[in-house]
Image 1 (cartoon, rainbow, N blue to C red):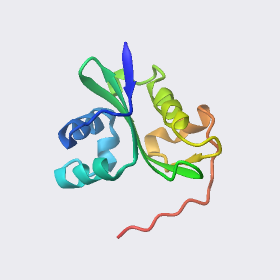
Image 2 (cartoon, rainbow, N blue to C red; image 1 turned 90 degrees about the horizontal axis):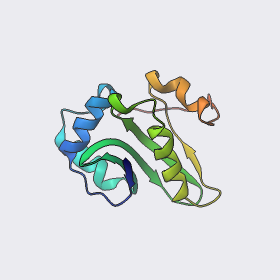
Image 3 (cartoon, rainbow, N blue to C red; image 1 turned 90 degrees about the vertical axis):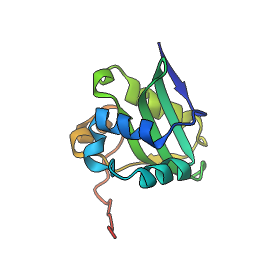
Image 4 (spheres, rainbow, N blue to C red; image 1 turned 60 degrees about the vertical axis):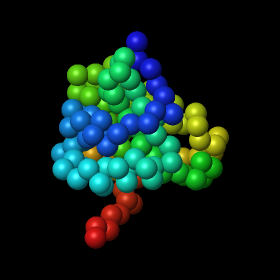
Length: 131
């Protein structure tokens, strides 16, 4: 039975391990423990999925809880994908946001088709500025 939590204190090492198991590690600084610690510390809405004591999924967001939530990371262990866990992590995120709060994200290349399938609307006006 998968358990979803918004109060789990996970370590950077646990998160890095999950990101690697999910393939999101290909696009995240999994070799930088300090950065991951900061990513976890400064996200203000994090939902985790657990199979027993094993972290198998995460939804990590930055939000004002009323207008917009930026879903920075959605990762599910590859062994658990296609079981509705990612969708449930997003639903758990939505239940903690205000009624009119929208969720925005930048899709990872491998997940680009996934989001339309679960109700997201494509927006071609996203821009990024890298340091």
